[in-house]
Image (cartoon, rainbow, N blue to C red):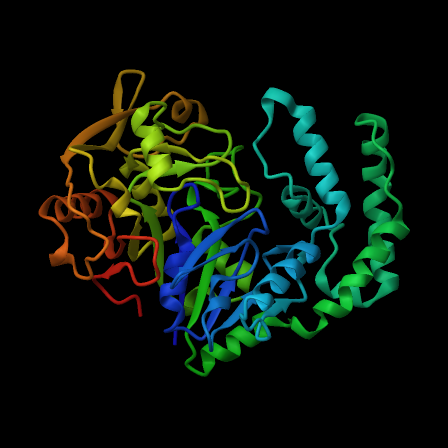
Amino acid sequence: MPALVLLGAQWGDEGKGKATDLLGGSVDYVVRYQGGNNAGHTVVVGDQKYALHLLPSGILTPGCVPVIGNGVVVDPSVLLSELSGLNERGVDTSKLLISGNAHIITPYHVTVDKVTERFLGSRKIGTTGRGIGPTYADKINRVGIRVQDLYDESILTQKVEAALDVKNQVLTKLYNRRAITVHQVVEEMLEYAEQLRPYVVDTALVLNEALAQDKVVLLEGGQGTLLDIDHGTYPFVTSSNPTAGGACTGAGIGPTKISRVIGILKAYTTRVGAGPFPTELLDADGEALRRIGGERGVTTGRDRRCGWFDAVIARYATRINGLTDFFLTKLDVLTGWEEIPVCVAYEIDGKRVDELPYSQTDFHHAKPVYETLPGWSEDITSARSFAELPKNAQGYVKALEEMSGARISAIGVGPGRDETVQINSFL
């Protein structure tokens, strides 16, 4: 059975948790393949709301095996706290698998992240300050700490020493901070080792064996396409690859095993942090989207910037990821607008541009070109088929589908687990 990829088609926060949870009953494994606890998913099950930061959304689905792949960076304290919180609420977390090749976020990564961002001042990137970037930097620089290193104290100590040789110089001489001791870090990491041991396996082997046995594997991205380190709005991006290509390297599954790539789109657009945002609304409409949509970051607690739907970004996500389907979320938030603008192109230096500009400078100066679609006032949260949606809501969905370049196979009409209109099967 081929694998499925589920990822954000905008700047993240599109509602991937709801989509993953919806599919969870049909899949055997749900895999996080990149990012860390800088990503957050809100999943509503009945009258219960769960905020997940590092764990795959499939952890809430009985019978599904949740997996943290090798491409993820893991803060042990955050992971264990999240597991403990779910256990207290009666959620079975015993099936969780963690790749031994995943990299560990240490206390010095968090410290470096925070002081660097503060030092940048007005030039800051807008990171979450959770050590994600510095951990990925150490991974690339080959001085990172992996989960498997927690089980060899000698190797762990050598690697921490090598990492702190440079970092302590930077912390003390550039940032005027106190040096971090090797013993302090090693001791803390070893305390986590035994608590994590039951979950640590060769996840790439497990997943490939599962696929060979016709199991369904869902690969879940942590952030959106426009936050991809290679294909996003650099430098205002994350430090990994949430795009479809990152699913292969971050989970250890070959591209020929993937049959469907599903992009999650909000019916409007949001982003958190700094960086260009052509359709951003700094008026009453923007505030209304934020309020009605509950647009506050699950992990960061920051208000999300809000704007109208951007079809240029959607087309770009389709192209970069090879999307086969879209899951359109939060359509209900747009109920009540008499007219709804949609960005169909950009104007740059007086010229119309229909595709995402290659140049960072051009994108920064891009002005949205809008087409206006008729809105609707009817409550759509009880709709369970496309025909039950108001005609104008149907027209809005069809217009977005045509502009975006891939079929819309499901629509979120409310926050609840069952508040979804399924048009086509993802399997």
